[in-house]
Image 1 (tube, one colour):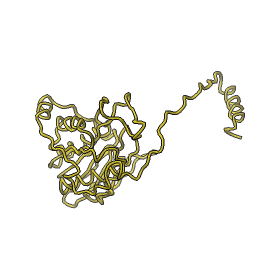
Image 2: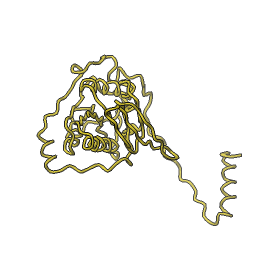
Image 3: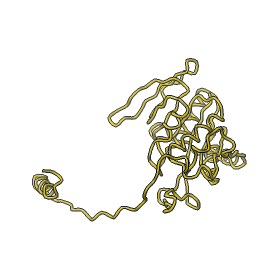
Image 4: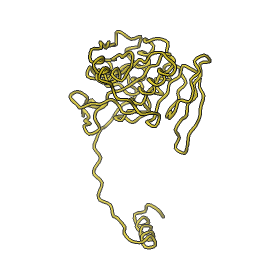
Length: 264
């Protein structure tokens, strides 16, 4: 069974900066981490390999420094890793990113399962995983909280999806793409041997010349999304806390809401 996991290097949430001219995240020189949701996708791929056999391939698109998240994935047990990096990919929106990742997956070859975290913590769009599935023509199973069954002979998968008010059990054909939530497992820690092996690993870098893609669909120029303005919202004024018994505070709250014309 061949599994591909798409991961992303993201800025630490305490250190996010935006370039006012390009209107994109500043990544160079910024403390970065593996997108937390992607760690669960890597773990699920490893668990699936342990049960059904096969190999786990990890890909990420980003600047040269993104190779660190690939090393982290190799350290916990992934078999192969690939860095998708080229200045031509810079500034890509979710559509252009999904397109480029899909072409990289095609280069890897025929796969049975693609796994992603449900979203990246820097953009929070949850669009790249489904976008990759669309580009590859695969069924997409989002917000997966449990993989119940994989039948390789009949090419089918059964999963549980997390909903706001419960769970949904759904069956799909393979190959398919899943995006996972953190309830699905508990990511393992790398072993000392795994860390040493990852440090010595030679990770190939694929540039725009190495992938079967249309150059006009890549990077900032190939992104249909346009960021018109980036700004920091004005700080909100302090609110008011109503203290006392509910019988006293509820009528007072209603009066204040009507006075502010929030309700009538």
